Image (cartoon, rainbow, N blue to C red; front, side, top):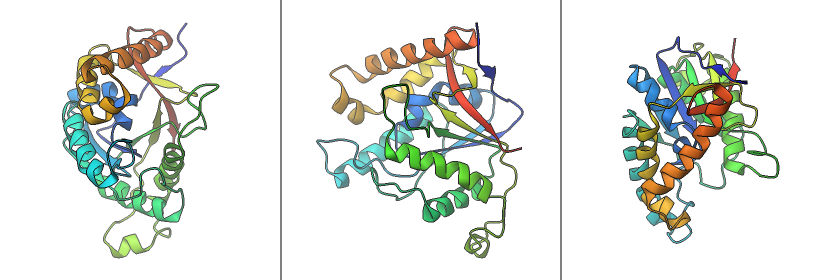
Length: 243
């Protein structure tokens, strides 16, 4: 029995905002590949540069490696715009500064759909979500509302960023409270290629080759989503409507 609804398709521009390089690839790459294949526009914003993500590399050495891997990874699913903010990996704080920075990028990109990662405390019972993911997820939701209000972050008006009231939904990938999904049966290979571009990051996590690691993980997760959505493979999202 299926318990997930199809994601809305009546939009043309989406903006993905996540904490780190690789966050989209673990949660939503197959869906992004499906959307860009339809001609939809998707851009990526990373709140940090992922510089604290590899134990054997210093942040100064790690940041450019992870940036390059993310750009290649995004290209594999049809995304050519990848931007990086300069919040500290592992120390991202929800608050006015982050809300303002995210409001700025939302007003600039003017998305109808915003994609981010699970903001809830856990992935599943007995697990725990990272502070960065929780901080970014909450701040994305706040900034989605802030972006339409000219009296919040008024300095952005001075910068030339006029209010954008066109955000219709925020979709949280990998949420334990998912409500919707995208069939990724036809885009699994592109999702695998995208995650496999994170060679240095995966190499620090696993002895498997990046392609084998990506195939095993994404096939397992996709099958779980597919069972709930009534297809072979699917990516679930918790969809929040902004009215």
